[in-house]
Length: 319
Image 1 (spheres, one colour):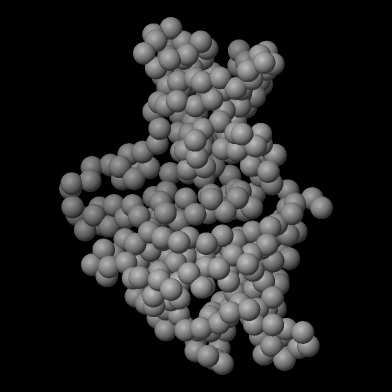
Image 2 (cartoon, rainbow, N blue to C red):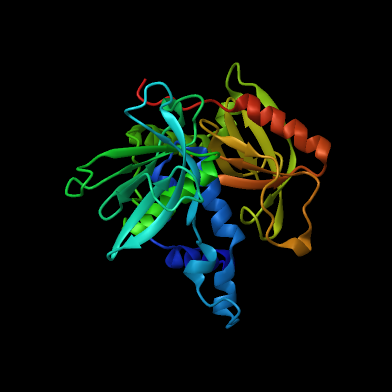
């Protein structure tokens, strides 16, 4: 078995149950990107496997969340200023997990408290969010709590921060992340997977078809894993919204990725510092997979990025 497969499986095994997985939000690219960064950046489990005692707690060191911070809370009663600054802080009161919100961080008296026991925390779809508050998360309280099933809505400064808040809330509430998607669009994912398999099998026929245009192509290096591992010689082609990776020009297809809902990472994480970050390194993150590539130079990299951005299309759900 490949050593990196063993490493990844070890990470997955030790991954706490409150961590958000890409399968839960398959159409939010930033969720997959954050998950990948966690997986390949924090390789502290290697220290544990090697007997290095400098890391005493894998869970606490690697998956430390947010304990307190400033967000905006939406008020159902205030129609003039529905979004108000609030400082959130976790507490344990009488043995129960609570998220208190304050008007200011220095104040002792809380404006209110949210009972987290049996609550459900989740990310909000940015396409349905207020355009001035795109990074939202929610807490649905238990119907048996004092809040009687009330839903609290918050907004923060970034997608990453929203993910960290949700994971921290789940950690306190005891909620386990769901691997199945919360957005009802499974047929789209199934269709994309089938499309990928058919494309991988039939590149020659596709290229021989009428009206087929190769938008961009060239030699690339592909990394074994997204942020670490050896580099392998490959050849890339962008054809009709699909990114093909071949063993060599005219060779066997290694990957065929539909670019629907994809995005590009201009500066991917590089864990193996001894390798050095190559001048042309970039990442491609799609709904089905992710790749770390190197174009050899900053100029070539920018040409690839422009071509990929031009080929990426948006996934439309429910239409």
